[in-house]
Length: 149
Length: 261
Image (tube, rainbow over all chains, first blue to last red; front, side, top):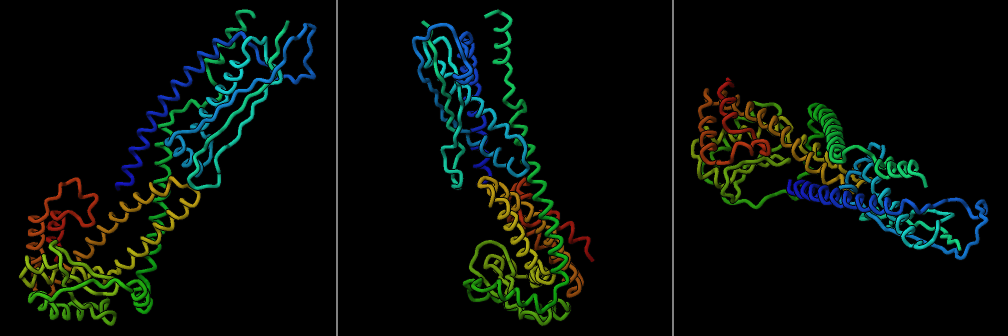
């Protein structure tokens, strides 16, 4: 009985803290995305992209983020493993991670006109076969920032 | 960039299609409910099959199983009180009345040092009375009821059923927790509760058996009622604890005993 009670307490606490942090994070992301709305990013490859204007600078810009779910999200996902279906708790984590990584990349390309050849990659950085493993995801966004003369 | 395009970008930022719209808390409750329901169904199904088989098991198999499960279960005992000593005669009478008890165990009676009022039977048929019970109760009729209750458990093969239930519960936990690390904790606690509930049904059956036996021996069941009145006085557990208790509430037991003739 005491085990179950402890589990419920941990789940309850992490549910509230997790959703609070997530809400704050989404608000922050939205604010930053709206601020950057006039800076385009393109995922064209450099071979298909052409311009008549003179380019002064082309540099690599990257944005990385490592993100993990809270205890409640991981618990719900592990229950979902039984029945299958959309892991809605992890969807929000992946979305947060991707948007944060892209935002960091765009913020890094300060002064550039726009970014071409944008790529996004995700890797699990934990040991997925270990029993104690917590799902942690590293998301990297990179591209080439172009500055016109 | 024109204004219309900007508006479109803004609406994409505001309305996120990549994240599920469902409430995570509600989802969690549905999942837990589903898992609990499935586990209970499997548990009850397997349990009914096991009880069916145990009821039809031969005496030879029963004795074999009992032997394998009672290695190292002997408890430290103390010298028997006089009223417990007198029960040997009653025990022989009860055994001679029921075919299910004959030719299995000699049902040795022991006394253990324990203040609580309690008595129990081990899988090999040894019956233990606590010192608290022997001190509190002097009446032979009352002690005969307690003895008959424990022998009733043995006659109904409740000890084998509880062993099978443990095995079923641990199997279900094993199957689920081989994939998940978080789930096993939840299921362990659930199987505990349902096990107790079933056990109360067995207690009721044992009460019925004991009441019938005592009625045959003495022609009345007043001893049993007296015993439960004593229990009621001793125990002060609040009403809500009944669900977690292995035995039915004492009041219900008195009511039930009075109906048996």
